[in-house]
Length: 410
Image 1 (spheres, rainbow, N blue to C red):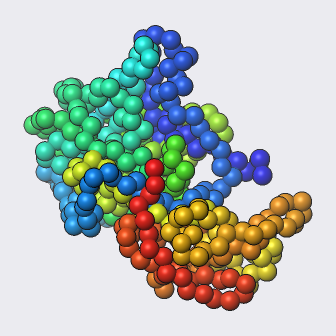
Image 2 (image 1 turned 120 degrees about the horizontal axis):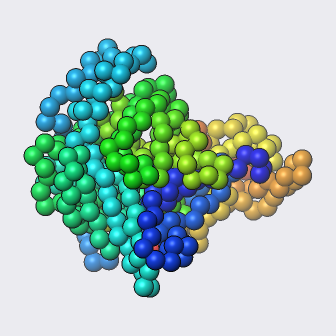
Image 3 (image 1 turned 90 degrees about the vertical axis):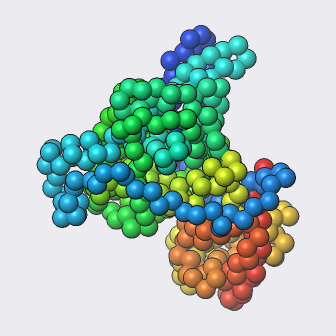
């Protein structure tokens, strides 16, 4: 198991903070850079859910999705965009078109008499000065400033944050004349092998371009300090380092397909060829709500578990490896109230303790659930208060259970 362990660096991985400390360097690291955690697989995560906003009533689905476009067309042709053979002139043209939509972010932090400064990235969301970045870039900031591609620096206010998607929206009063909005693409269309580019502020080196390919799609990654997961993340080998956090991952049509957020490595806080980006469709869903009310509510099921691998199948005498295995159910959660059941025991297989007796979710509202990531996605696409019908296997029998999703608890 230890040989398979990788480290997710949520605070500095995809480009968190470069810390330029004014005093007490060693101590400041502890509160500016979240500590990393180790996971054995990306599938063994708790279902995504949402925070209840005190005193605020809203219907999230009524807020429109983002449809903004650049002021000027991208010069890369569709034929070139679909090809892996790019000339330096093509990439230069792409960079010249997109860099005015990317910003460098500097945050200033003061806690208990200690001060520090950190760096991140972001991109322009609309003409009114809203900018998307990572929550972990600004979450402890006392002051935020934005540097645009032309060197113009402006103070920014934090408009809204969502720790569970690791997204935040900040705003400047005025955009420079040549700065422009970036197009939000459809991350569901992203394919392995696509050429992609990251523009950001690695190690404080602003407006840096790196190029790679999409290494994988559909990854499930931790959101950070909260015990919830972000489904459908995009994996890339484009160089992403501390300071890239919050910057855009772009396809060759000039569309934002993800927000660079994490790296996976062997413990080193620098890129080892595995970068991870929050999918653009999460930005479409979350950012308008952050602008409207400042926070976002995710739906909550209240289970923890993983996918059905070979030893789980063997231990539970299952006929297939399809489905999401429920290891535990949170007391008084929607899953608990609906009667979903977690593991009731365990058995040893080749000296490994394997849970037994838990329900296996095989479909959600009639849509097949192949693994735990599928279940995470189906829950995340809904809203608190929605009802979902889960098809489960229990004691070799198929059962349908109706669950009313709740807001994610604090």
